[in-house]
Length: 520
Image 1 (cartoon, rainbow, N blue to C red):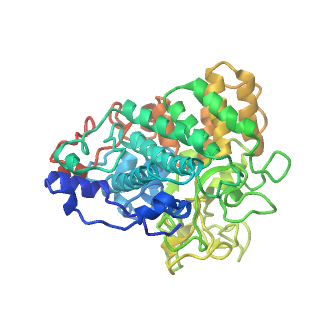
Image 2: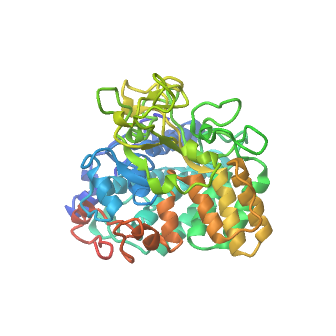
Image 3: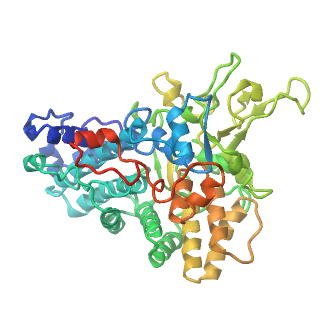
């Protein structure tokens, strides 16, 4: 997915043009596309859509969507992760962790830009496909894929920033003489747009395994899962229950297991290749994940996704990463005894004292790589889900350790089951809730619950989805972010820190017409 045919004008460029009152025609194009070919050729149209998928790979310190800056922001704001590394190295992450970050953080500016670049690409693709002349079913499928991506991006935007500008078409000349590009709409209006996009995707995308479904592209199940999650944030519990029940009832997804209903090594879910037939990329519980790897192209990585979270060495040995986004002690102590997810989520670094005898100390990872001891790295814990092996998986791209290919799991079947359980509890369907939650618990080697409460489901979500960028948003939607985070010494302020500040750079570009969030 490394086509370079669809790099359209970003919202930042549009805002500059608007604030300077330049003509749309004065803005230089950042890419070219043969629109005439797309209108009549399904292959060209597919390439157009592929170009929009490329926005999923935006990472590093530049524009971001689901990569480096995103996970640093939302994991470190939660009780799941600490900034990591040495003091001052991850300075913006430290401010986010303490809820003292300002609108001047480049994290927020680059996330904002990344999402609106992707949204603009989707908007352009949708407008072109609206005029396509080839078969209607293919057109609808391709529009469904673009609607899924746009819905995902707006969902992240509204959870990060609340109300944001609603841009659903390519701006025309008249837009640059108005405030339409820089006026926030309510979060409720954004949610209405998201639901519309994802419902269109549900109605027009093929199911997983269908002849028209390519691995890595959005399917009906992916759209249903994400739409259920959106309704969960809106407390539309019947919708959550119905959508997740449809995914479950399809029979197209299953939890990764390697021993009956259990999974001995939970970490295999997040590796590139299966182990004894279990796990690996695009496994049986994958609803949607960002595709990377040497066979896809040089652009198909999310820079720093793995290396940003990898062990940072000291004392002369070759380090594997920045050491940012370190799993917290609070997360480490939250697991029940016997929960296999703990060892599959967190790399625990052994202390200098050698309990195993001379020459056999330190922490050995699944691929045989050995981290000598706690004296050799800066953090006592690292994110195992983000680890990419330099020896047992596809090689890094471009000769850079920052560009390790690592598929990013956007949604898994385990989350569908937990959403179904939460909705069932809310609707009084206790039996259904127990069935769903116990499937997830049993896979982790835990006994079945005899009764289930909302707190049981919330606890299970944390254990299952730790370090997958859900915990902070979960605490906010559950209405307990302040209570939980202040208990850990974080400076969370109710009525303010449920969302992050609108980037000051975007406010400045809008001639102050883009309004800052309360108390920032």
